[in-house]
Length: 96
Image 1 (cartoon, helix red, strand yellow):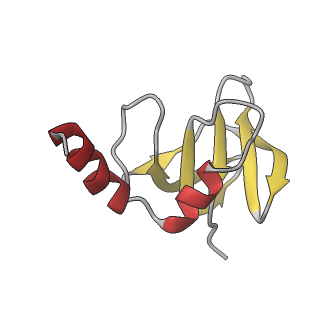
Image 2 (tube, one colour; image 1 turned 135 degrees about the horizontal axis):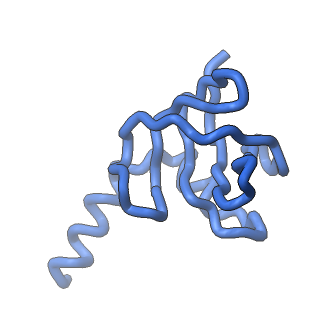
């Protein structure tokens, strides 16, 4: 097994199973990141981020989204889109 394949397996082990499930759904757009333990703050969310497409944040880091609006819901997951319509996030789990 190549070193890159081994590193990828280690990285995948750090990704929660619910994030994997949400990432296997066809959302119709590129998803910029998946959010866990998302807490709504006005029109934004503070959450743990996973699979950040930009590569600027590591899995499990806390982020705050730009202002967003809900655009879709599938299998218990919610997609939100930034007001500027450039970013799409999937809320995997929220805080009650």
